[in-house]
Length: 460
Ligand code: UDP
Image 1 (cartoon, rainbow, N blue to C red):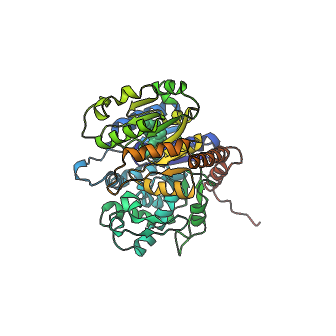
Image 2: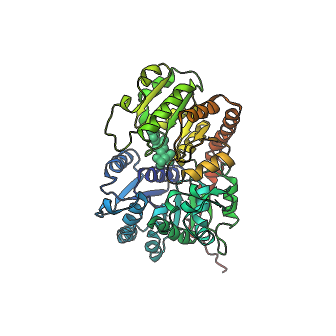
Image 3: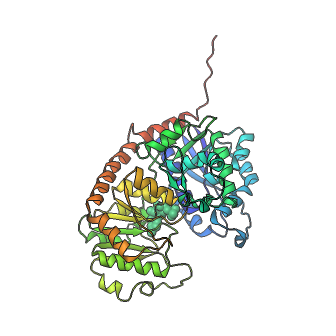
């Protein structure tokens, strides 16, 4: 009973995951209502506004409270993360006003929203973090204060392995992009987060217990926050959008005509793009592999051309039209991955994509691009054994021959078969985790229990 306030970072991926958490809470605990704090600004208004309108129209138990706009000069920020941190930090008084008027039972914040903790503390509202990435990322967030002490200098210049509890050694250059440069404002923001996170009432993670046992054990054993208690960790995933908005997309009809598990699907998230040269290498590699493919292409930002044939090798679309489909910008990924014709996924290792492939039982080839994706890749390949690794050259480029080799390894090699079996087993685990008595549903029950007022026993 009560209201839970969710405060996502104002970026689509974070907002969608947070709303999925809200849906999960009210589905199983309908006595709660949800209010989502939203921030819009010139850099995100369009997509967020239409998504909010859609949810408001379809799920009345989730309401939105719009925080006042803060004018920002986007040109002056070095990165998207720095925009998010600054926008959220400058909204702290507005968050305090909202919390005072709503008086919620609990506040659940995104990792960018640490500044809201102070406002909640004054009002005595417990604060929980919701991490839209995996437990491997939570390890690095909690352990970051220790890493900062153990590894003086910038990860980008170190050229050594970084050791964290519960994780395989990570090459320093593969650490999350936001913390590569010690002098950056993003690095300072994550240090601040690492300091405050252990003081929260709990950490909710979009993962499930059997997907990441080692990082979760390290967190729960207190190894990531030496010398102080670690808050409870609630794994409530996989929380994923149902993808119903894409049901009529042309690529689904095309997939209907392909044999079972024959198509390799390539998609690089909501922001991933390649240079024109790299796109041509991918195209050549796909053609040489001889496999069927569905490829989502986002044009490089400087190329203002909607005509895909300009970005691809001459005659590529014509030569591959019987076994390949290229779509511009977006495909309904959840539906694509769960289509029985899809047999492999070349992914940028965004956490939602990883969970979506897991739930669909589709083996992956890891081609990380930005954010924490290189860290995810190492865990996916070395620990989870759910992905094959792609070899980049020193300068980060991938030649056509490597793309060809990767697709063949994924689709018709012995090692591809092993990965496929592991992912199919994890698919069963993912479904089980969300069912009655499943680990994620039990974790949600414990989380909700933590919101109940503590009963004091009367001795009289
Ligand atoms: N997505 C999609 N179609 C596309 C590209 C992305 O449906 O063509 C969805 C995908 O299913 C996932 C989200 O966008 O839910 C991307 O999230 P992820 O964490 O994988 O990567 P990000 O975009 O945040 O880097």
